[in-house]
Every structure is written in C-alpha cells, then in structure tokens.
Length: 506
Image (cartoon, rainbow, N blue to C red; front, side, top):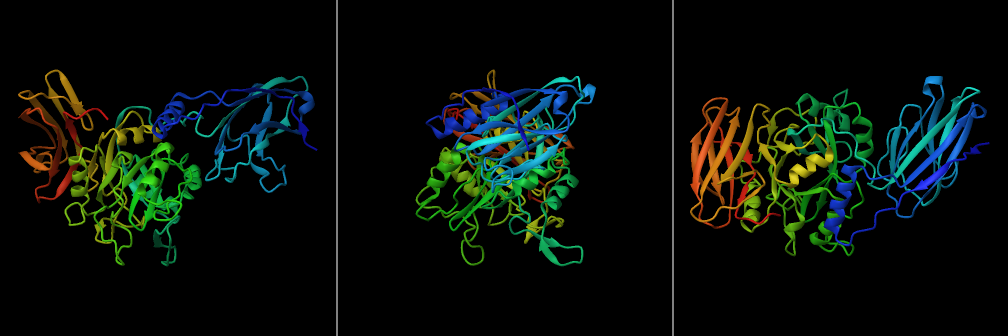
C-alpha cells in the first residue's frame, strides 16, 4: 500500500486576473520570461526506512487549472540515493483521471495539460482536487538523511524552457505548415498516399536549415503532444505550436498558445470574427490573416478573407503577405496588407509555405516546399516568446524564395534618432531622412524604396553584400516606408516590413 509522505507544503499567492485581455497577455508573458515563483512547494525528508517503498506527496489543484508543471530535485545522489517520479490525479491510481504517468529518474521537469504533456505523461482534463506526486525509492542507504523539493506551477506561470539559442540574431523559419494532424499527405514506404507524420515536416525543416517552424493544423492543437516529444531531439529547430483557424469566411494562424479556442465563426457561440479575436487576445499568441486574396467558393471554400462585419484589426498582429509561390500572382496578399497599412494599422508582413506534403521539393502551383517562403525574424533569442515578440514588433522580412544566402537589414535616421523595421520615427517637415539598407545574396537585383505603396526610389544591388542609401526630405506627414528587393528577372525576392514615419508608438 502506498504510504503518505510527510511533506511540508508552502503555497505562493496566485496572480489576480487582470481585467483587460491585452494586459492579461502581457502579464503572462512577463511572468513566464521572469520565472514566476511556484504556486506550491513540497519539501520532505528521505531516510533509510524509505528504501524500496512508494510514497504519495499530495497537493491541491484549484478549479480552472489548465496546466501543471513540476520541477523535482533531491539530495544524496553522491550516496546513491535514487528517486523515481510519477503523477496521480484526484481519482486515485486506478480512477478515470488517476495515474497520469511515470518518468522514473529520467526527467526533473514535466508538464501535463489537457492538450499536451511531457513524454512519459498523459494529456487530459485537469480535474480540481487532491493530486499527488508518486515517489518510487529503489535505493536509500540505511544512514541516509536526504531532502527532496518539488516546485509546482499552475497554468502559464512556470519559467519558460531555456532558449535553443540564447543570443539575439536573425532567425529563419516557416510560419505555416501542416501534417497528419490535419490534411497533409505524403507517400508511405510502399508508395501509397497517407497522412504525413509530423516528424517528416520537422525533419525537412532541419534539412532546410530553418531555425524555427510553426505547426499549424486546421482548428486543432492535437499536434502539441507530438511537438513535446520531438523538441528535445530537434534541438536546433524551434517548434512553434499553432493552429490554422479555418472558417467559412477566412483563415488565420494563431501561433504560440495551445489553449482551446472556439473557431465556429458565424455560429451562435462565435457570431463573428471580432468575437473570436477578442477570445484569442488574452492567450498571448500572434494572430495572422492567411492568404487573404483567394477565392471563397467551391474551388477553395472559405480560403479568401470575407469577414463581416468589419474586423477590428487592432486585434490582428500579422498578415500572410506571401503564401507559397503567390508573391507575383493575382493571389498575392501584399495589396491586402498594404491597405491595412494605409488605414493606419501596424501589422507585420509574414510568409509561410502552407506545406501539405513534407516530401515536396520546390514550389509549384499546388504548393511549396517547407521553408519557401521563409520569414526571417530578429529576436532576442531562439525561443517561442522571443520569436513571437519579434513578429509583433515588425522585426522581420520575407525571403520569398527561401534562399538562406539572402538577407535584408533596413533602418532610417532623422537627426540623432534611428529606427529599424517595425519602429516609428519622428521626422518634422524639412528634416533630412536617411534610409539605409544592407542587402546580401541578391547581386544583380534591384532594391526598391516603397512609400505608402509607391516606389519612390530604386537602386541596383551590386555584389553579394551591398550597402544602399536613400536620402529623403521629411514633409511632416504620416508614411510607412519599406524596402523590397527584386531579382534580375523582376520577381520579388525580399519583402521588408515598414518603418513608420510620424506614427505614434503602438
């Protein structure tokens, strides 16, 4: 029979809910980045009498909890003390929501949620009540006097996992890809077309040299559990959970959170897109409108953006300006994005392959291979919070053909003030403005300075690394200004995000 551990419990006060959804999202992100204190700390002693016994260490899970994260450590390893670890739900070991997993001694940290769980543990509902850590003690020497400590966080308060790379830089990725958790297909071993397993998508992203990829299956986050299993192995490719919210009046990617979100726009539960976007806002992700210029008929049901009533675009962070190979076609999302910029919305242009077959090579009218296009983001680290922050800030450009040799740096100055992509720059009438760009891997191309949708200056790109300068005179009015690069064949190669002249900070 399992014994009850004599553990000391210390409870940390839980953060109060913030009234405003946006503030709630910001607070959650800040708490995660800073490493909020645990909600519960369990401490206890291990003695020789515990040798080859099982002990349960109870703790209370409050109603409404969506995620449990546990960090466990103990002393005495140098004396061969060994503790194995598991988790039991409130129904007891054999209850419906009882035994939730066993990691033995191979993990010091694990997470369990309704949608996903660390390998060794089972996802599922988190019923409130008395849960317990299950300790197995295969070896404790007779004279041992060791201690264990378990730190437990509820919901998103746990410290974020360590970044894959803890350094600022330009990180290259694909923000739209599918797998067997939606409608992706690829040839099986015998050549039959079958649902394409998620690992094939991740493997191809690694082969393409991507730093991150978003797995965005239709209206589901069932892939989150597979992501939790694959991420430790693919420690050079950040796997971003996401979903493509697929409706009868448009599609959009919600990247980052795995919380439930009702996608049924047009139903009594979700009457319109504004209702959905307001529900998504406190989850803290990035929402991007996908391929907005598409037919919405039997050829592509619901693919085009036909949202009604008018959408509050303050709730949208990005637009998929390039989907697969559509940049220079009538289906390009760039004009749609520019109309939002003209209306004063500071939304980030991104690109995604929308890949539905991880074995696809090149770009065809039926789809594009993973990493074509690529979105290149300047972030403080290669981590989910940092990539999302870079996207929200507009620190990104789209490499339309997914060529890792190509790069774009774009900045502007007025007097002693400097701005980068995504920034606002104050420039009174008569001020001298200097726009500067560094373009790599685009020799023979043409760099175009685009102001409010019009090309106002153009220069040739000489050499594999070209420094370009575009002097302008300020007129005191609001403008958005970006840099594009076209190849010798006139096709779009690089799409930059704007600098916002005389716009207020967001």
